[in-house]
Structure formats: structure tokens, C-alpha cells
Amino acid sequence: MKIIICGAGQVGWQIARQLSGEANEVSIVDNNPALVRRATDTLEVQGVIGFASHPSVLEEAGARDADMIIAATHADEVNMVTCQVAHSVFNVTRKIARLRTQVYLDPQYADLFRRDHMPIDVVINPEQEVSRAALRRINAPSTFDIQDFLDGRVQLAGIALDEDCPVLSTPLKQLTELFSTLKAMVVGVRRGSRLFAPEPADQLFAGDQVYVITAREDLARTLEVFGKPQTRQERLVLIGAGNVGLNVARALETQRERVRVRVIERDRARAERAADALERTIVLHGDGMDDALLAEAEIGRADAVLALTDDDKTNLLSCVRAKSMGARLAIALVNDPGMVPLMGSLGIDAHISPRATTVSSILRHVRHGRVRSIYAIGDGEAEVIEAQVLSTSSLAGRTIGAADLPEGVLIGAVLKPGGTLVRPRADTELTAGDILVLFALKTDVPEVEQMLQVSVEWF
Image (cartoon, rainbow, N blue to C red; front, side, top):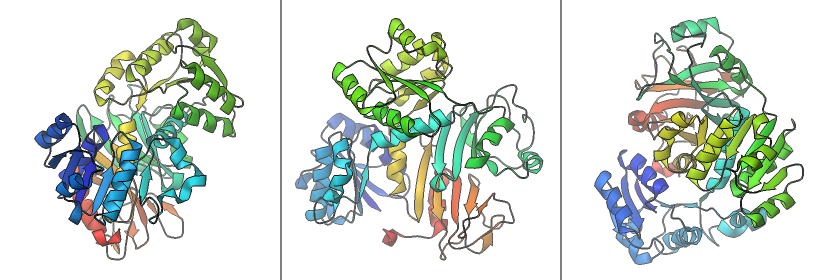
């Protein structure tokens, strides 16, 4: 595929890195020469300096024969105009835009992005994606990562194994036999700096981080097996009442199991808007790092604190202060991936990455095949892919054991056309219409796409 990526910031660069190594022809456009130079120096991409919405710049980037354009600059309006120009001037088939401003996503303006108005095929809103990620983190506090698949029927859970984990040094094959009724499968293991897809004879050790694909109803039991019993979150403190914080607070108010939520916001006008928008949530105006205000928010009794401001340092320091005052769990919103390694030494339990969630959302619409969902693991080291098996796929009509999957690929769940969820075994037969949730190391993703046997024409 020939793909143009507009915006060479963190999201654009990460998407370019993912796609340029997979036999795609990638051009990246930005008006910042330093960002374009960074991309061309480190990736196999063509760099174009200029404003992405200008027809001449898009033509230089190869828009006349491009299959797809991804508009991910920092300005919503530039992204929208870029897609319009790509459609009207160059007839680009597939147009994806990242839009942050919430008003554009209001249901009453749903017709705005029709082909005869503002022709954008896919709108990605980072703040909505981050809000969903935050809610998943709250609902699974003993995991370091959590993601939904198959419309929520299956979850990917990241679990850090401690010294008291009851299944250490047990071969995975034996675990499967011991817990035969549990719809759960370890698909990825990070040991030190190495991420790999485990073999049945592999054992787990303290310090490992494992990725488990499990049926939603089996998540609590799965966590218990790995020594991480699920706990209910009843008292929450959110720091930051921007779009993400407000979305999370609103969602928590609608949950059937009531939780006590307090929101801290430094900006008075934003705090007043949040207070007007929320019904049962207490909104406090002030600095999330102020001891007196944290005490007023009863931070010492909080089951979890989520720092969701737009400043990474504020989020990290707020979490450190909250933990020192007794908060049981601290989760920070972190935009800069360079900050993530600091979290362990700071005692922060988990983080949410807007970049990673946005990249995952975009990749879902870029991958070949009947791909329904994608989640990028770590720094793009692997992907968990939800995809449908078509009749033309080499997987159709074969058992998993005979499918000759690459070494770095494991199928973690199979949803049959009748709606039955199956834990994969070597003798599980794959048929057309099955929906798979599989783990694939980055180097094996192209082969997975090839096995799914779908071409660009599917778009």
C-alpha cells in the first residue's frame, strides 16, 4: 500500500515506524523540518516538509496514486481540510483523521463527515479512546494493562508476577490441564527486555509480565490463579477535569455499582463546568499536588487515584504525592514514552498512553484483512489482533495445530459464527466466519495478514 501520514509527532512517527517495515510505501508530511528529518533519518520513509492541507504538498508526497491518507497533525481543522483536499483533488480512497475537539463528535453533527460534505472515512478521537482505557484500568486494578475484544466478551490482561504467585515454575501445558474449565491463555511473556510468545513447555517466573487472553466472566478467576485477586474500587479521586477526566467521571456516575468520586481541577472555569455537568461527583478547585486539598479529597482512603491532566510531570508527581498519603493505586496519564521507565522507581502502579491508544485505533483501519480491532503491545513490539477468517484464508478448514502459524503468533480465543466462545486447542478447527483474537510479534504481523488472505480491494 502507498500511505501518506500527515503529522510527524509521536503518533505519526509511531504509525510510520509500524507501517514502513511492512512492505508499505510511506510518505510523512510535516511543516517542522526537524520532525521530518527525524523520521527520514530513522525510518524508511519519504519526507515532505510543508503544510499537509496544501494540494502542492500532498502532490509532492504522492497523493495522486496513494491508497490511504492518515491526517494526524496537532490541528483538527488541518486534518479535516487535508482529507477534503485528498478526496476532492486526488480522489484518495481511504481517509483517516484524528480529531480532538468534542463538538465535532456531537451526534447532531453526524452527517458532517459524509462523502458529499467533509469526506472522512474514519474519525479517531484520542480523548474518547483514553477515557475508555482509564475506565478499563479502574475495573481491573490488579492488571498493568487491560483491553477489550469481541465486543467485550474477551479481555487481554497484563499481569505482573510476584514472588508469591502460586503458579510459578509450572509448565503452561500443565496449567491448561489444571484449570481445564478456564477460558484463558497466556499468549505473551515479557522477561527482562525480551517479549516472546511462549511454548507449552515454558514456565513462568517471578518478575515476568504475562499477557493473558481470557473470557470476561473468567477474568476474576484468572487473576486469582496468578495471585492477583480482584478488588472492588469504591472510592476514586480524579485529578484533572478536562475532556478525559470529565468523560471518566460521567461514565462512573452511570455505573450500576455506585462509587464515590472526587475530582480535583486547578482551573476555576473548568472546575465550575465540571461541577455543573456532574450530578453525584464532588468537584474541588485547586492544585492536585497540594497536601491540604488531597486530604480534603480523602486521598488516604482512596482505592485509586487517576491523574488525567494534559501535563505528564503534574500527573506523575500527583500520583507520587497521592501514594505517599495512602492511596492504594495510582494511575498516570503519560504522553511522553520517555517518562514511562520512571514509573517503577516512583511507585506508580500503571499508566495510560494516549499515543498507544491512538496508534492502536488507527492501525485497525490500516491492516489488510477483515480486521476488527488491534491493540499495540509495549513500544509496538507486538500486536493483539481481532480478525475474521474468510473462506479464502489459508486458515479456513484447518486445525490450529496444522495451521503452521509463525513462531511468534498464538491464537488466544475463537468466536464461532453461532456465538460460541472457544478456548483454542491444537485440534480446534478454524472455519470461515470464525473471529480470532491472536497475539503476534511485530516481525510476524505481515505473515499473519497474508494468512488472512485479504487484499487492499477489501477497503
